[in-house]
Image (cartoon, rainbow, N blue to C red; front, side, top):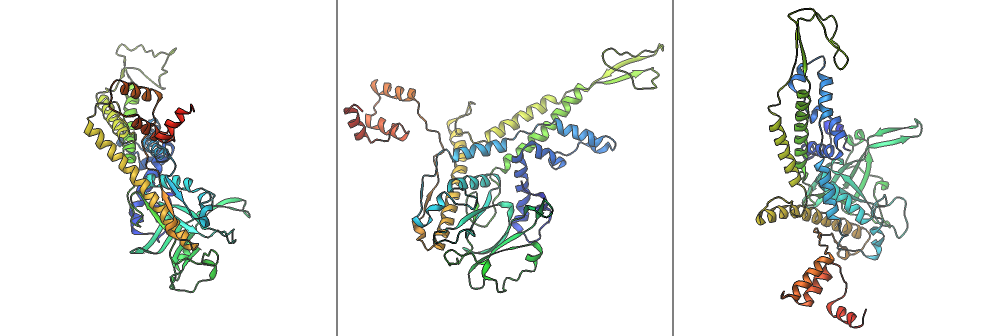
Length: 460
């Protein structure tokens, strides 16, 4: 979860683009976290009604009840999970690494994540925030001749500042703050620290960890100790081994989260739900009206109680609120829900009447998002792996990384095969070779047509 204090000026060393985008990242982070976080943020996402603001005595309690009755429908998180499922329905099409870097396939990160696991994490950050970054580092625990770089993933909100001229990234400032266990105090405490990754005046890459106070006094032109220069087999690297990963490119320019409109729609539904549930509650609550009763104490109400007086002018009744606007509120919410569902990623017809052109347009838009996410992640992994190859004195052109682009469920049932074969017998102009090729593409067989025919002849 993003620390909201960061966006409120905790650090002054942040890029102007960061300042502009941080609010969207926090919003998307909260929407993904779900109802508990949305309600914890209170009036940020659900303002008080005018009556609650005017009521200085009970307004706060009434607001809490108003908020508690509202439902938050998390279409944002469910859509992200669905997209990740589609992106990773199949493994990457092709991953080829030279022998020197082969261990990176199963140990890509310092935490032991494989290449495929890191790809899943990168896709997640692309969808939620529209941005993340990957940094190569030397493994401090391994100084053997077989040592290879390891990769760390940095979410959008931890990439604080950067400077890039053309294709050269001169520095990037990363936030590595977090809770650490203090053995002396026997508790966890929050420690602020920054990692500066930059090029020195000779063009060599260095990485140094600083407190915010130390960074504010840091001299970029000063001589640095050898300990801040990551090395593998005694070799330094002549570029900052960091790669930005956005939704549709790997540039340093920040892009808006791709599903930000859906997050805003979820919040619109939440606010509409609060008003609708509040109106329903108020309509069901009748107010007792008494006339001519001398009441020293509040009247007892409910089964087994009564109110009595000898006054001939006494009268009593219940006042109720009319629900004239409830149907309009309900209809408005229904339309918002339908819009949220249509903004999802179902790659099939929804069951509603939809023209062929409308269906084609809807599917092309959704497939474009999937292709952008997958393609950009593939480019980023090729880029970072080629940096690793150069660092280890390996030909970077030997790196091949092709992500999965098969986003449709092309499973074929036995009934489909039977229907197709029946249609051929009844005159469908389709050869047996074409039918076999269709079956092969749908994983019914791995044999060629000739191999299949020969296998049938041999009774296999």
